[in-house]
Image (tube, rainbow, N blue to C red):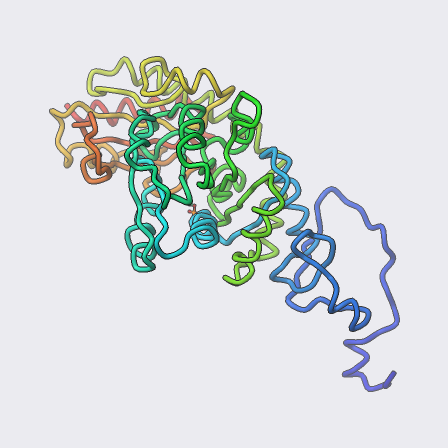
Length: 395
Ligand SMILES: *Cc1c(COP(=O)(O)O)cnc(C)c1O
């Protein structure tokens, strides 16, 4: 080898000893991955994680994160995407072609519906909505053109918990060709097992997570995942994922690996805090309805109770319709602990007002302004004081 310092600063005989171990998985950064010879370059496979080929297709850091997420979700395969929304998009692009249709629950995460209305519609893919609380509404929507059915539990913002078992059973009976996909961001792998919804073989085919929420837990990382059991489905998703050129940053993957050990502690603490606030809010005269799946009387509570052992730290208050949008905005503006912002699952509690009539295609019972609360890690007593002062300001 040349003795030129420019070459020796790149190529060197010294190799650091193997078997360095510490609690944290190292951050492996790469676009280029070296192969010992051309035969290895030709034969290595990343799709089953048996080898490294290119940074975009996996590093020890991302493969480890994928394996831990597969364990969390009771899945066999996991792919990482740069955001939860891009994970949804991988599934749509992998499974749908021009002339196909997909079904969405009417209370779906809004950007998912927006993707169907814009990109998917332009590509000749139709979407139809069903009422997640009424599985019979699937009947009119399920046809031979339906290749993908999205499920979400609970619904976005309004938090209705569907009868997932009934929805899955009906789809399997009437549209055996359709892949059943669950957005399991709320369940975070901890509330229930979506691949085993009770009876033998009754489960969804794949799930996506916005790792941005609870798995990150910091309000600082954007990432998504796609999990499945079936090898052939995984390969289909993995090839589309690869052709779309999606990758995640090594430091972001490491941030996720650091957050996962505390996921269950945080999830359960935020669950307990949200339940306490939901019970308190039920007794407040300005609150018409408290939406929280673990609260008796909340839409779909029985379905939640029949399936779940936990709930996420989200709740929504329907403010009495006698209070105007402006009054409710002022309530939210004046909160001290709760900050105004999107997303959830981080340490800071968040509040966002919504109006149901702008969010749904099907009729909803919500006439009052909705305030979606995401509970962080502050003292619950402080959060209740903050909300009580806000409700008092309504007059
Ligand atoms: C936040 C969220 C997403 C999207 O995640 P991003 O990482 O923000 O793109 C998808 N589905 C649900 C249910 C979410 O809450």
